Length: 107
Image (tube, rainbow, N blue to C red):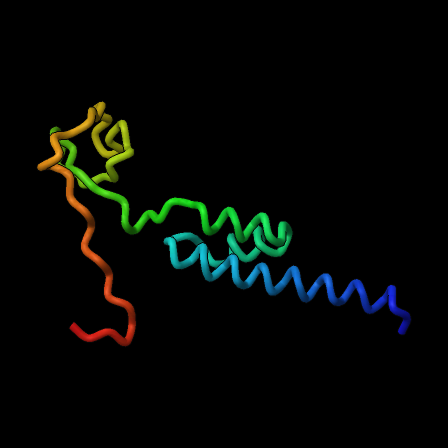
């Protein structure tokens, strides 16, 4: 095997390693592991940076729709259940979602 042939395998291993790392970061932020794995493998480095910089959906502040009382994220502007237009709520109406326990933690 020549040096040029071996170089292709090295790049594939690097891309897969970035893909797995990107998948774990994306999954920890509430995304799909397989989707982030594909992004990280196709775009090594850039995919990982995108996964690190994305918003963590599980820790976004929440509020209730005044019309149907559906709990939605603070950045949602129209209630997906009833279609009510949502404006910036009073700070006392905003709550942080409860922290999820990780497997192995006792509480």
